[in-house]
Length: 59
Image (cartoon, rainbow, N blue to C red; front, side):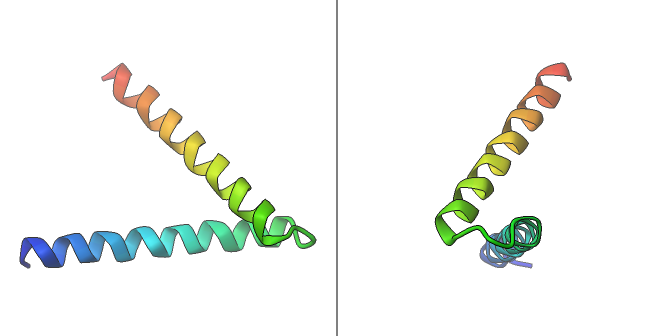
């Protein structure tokens, strides 16, 4: 697999993961509008980054 193909595959996986999380947020918050969904998605992504950084700092 070429480097370009790897980058594209990584982007596709990231987009899929974001859609799955977004769908979960919608399921948990059926009355939320798109702005609220995007805000909650951003909060979850930030939480994942903080957890990842904490894990990396321990190693």
